[in-house]
Length: 324
Ligand code: HSE
Image (cartoon, rainbow, N blue to C red):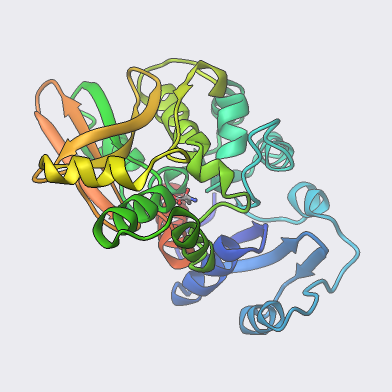
């Protein structure tokens, strides 16, 4: 076993907005060492983080080796694979293979990628258990908003009876700006894309797919559901009209895209103006109903490079601390 003063080594698999955010935040932690970064074009081994970030910004390649992401996962000695490739709802790939291989090779995994967990939650959590390594995924739901570790650790003494919330920052941004400033749907969606909060394919956001993925992850993690995307009844916000939003406002409500974990539903719902789930802009919020602690509502930044990286860093540090 390594001692607490030894360096904790990680790879970053995927170097888009979230991967670059991880490279920035780990620089503040001297015990962490990034041994490899993989993007879609190749692998940088033992990277200088400032240099690869500058290269990425300039649109230059970062690779300095012939290795692939899978070579890194299988053969480069390190403690944690940070898997942050984009979510693919169809089959979870390439993230699913990355996570599976990392666990098979007894590497801990921290991920913000919803695809693998939606496609194969039971398989992956079972594999992590049998291999004696950690699979942590706080960043998959709510970005910087604490929810998974909050329920698992802080609320460990309570039974969770229900979870519902605003789980997609892009939709919340669109609904907020449309309602408050009477702006046009396409204009606000394109702003959300420019801000870097929308998924690579923004239809994942607006049709409710992204929220449904988060509902599946929470249902499997806390309600033992073994659910997949197909089990969720999903309605998005892509057909919401300005008239509907204004009418709701006149009656003292806002329209929010609500994911209900116990019901396995995603749909636009009327929320009273003063309700704690009425958060604006890119914020996410979730209400957790418990048997002994009552209802607890959390809110926070649900998307963004550094915000999502903060949740990943928290998972990495938690694994590092538990190794001793
Ligand atoms: N596109 C997502 C959102 C990012 O807007 O919330 C975080 O999953």
